[in-house]
Length: 97
Image 1: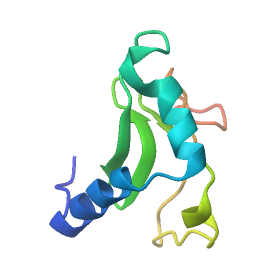
Image 2: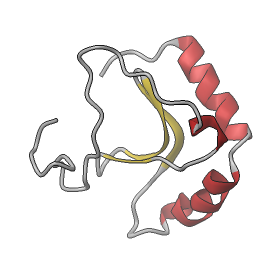
Image 3: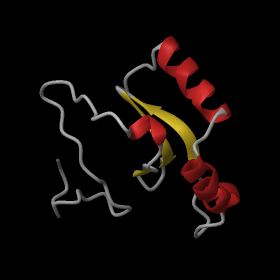
């Protein structure tokens, strides 16, 4: 796993302190292993992104719509974005993206 840049880590920490309304409501459900015993992290850095919520052991990322998502995302060339399910498969039904 790539090393997390210090500024990315600091930005994730800052974002934890000012959640959107959607993130606050979703966190109240995901925290303390309330969903099937899965452990979720808030504002988890996954270079080059910061995931709103991530369950590392299930390889699951959850993004909540909010004010900071108003601008279209910028994706570095050669990078694909897709949803990985708890089973480890891509939203397209394959095991890789």
